[in-house]
Image (cartoon, rainbow, N blue to C red; front, side, top):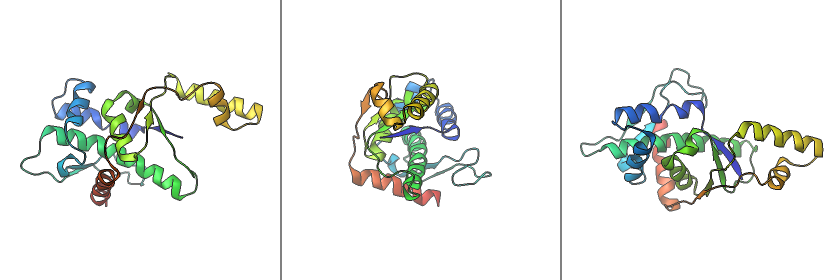
Length: 193
């Protein structure tokens, strides 16, 4: 099990795209993004709108590639979400390569992205893993309590979290196959350079 929290940089991406696409609220943006097929018809967003920390590119800007004359609003909306998710999964891949993470089961999503139907589904799709949005509200405070209890009890944090019944909530399963997910991630990697 791995907890994924959308980063402040990633959290900035949906709002400007929702505004540019004329969406009145997050729900309408989510519906628009989920209306496009996986891979957004070839449209890819590298979401470095205000620079990026990982990789360290503080002066980077975002790029939208793969636009064709038949592109529509839904493809751009989905590309925005897919770009953020691909960036998060690149970070997870880096943790795995570094040996900081050895096994990944389901993903637990917290933060602003957890409130987005598009974000939840696209994360499950591209990670090819179930995504759980926990019922708890104050994840930082709960996490600190779990860590403190684990130290006091001299047990792994997972033991405390399991005993306290944490990490339970609605679960989203992947709705696309591994080949489609790999194609989306490969297109993102090519655009990211």
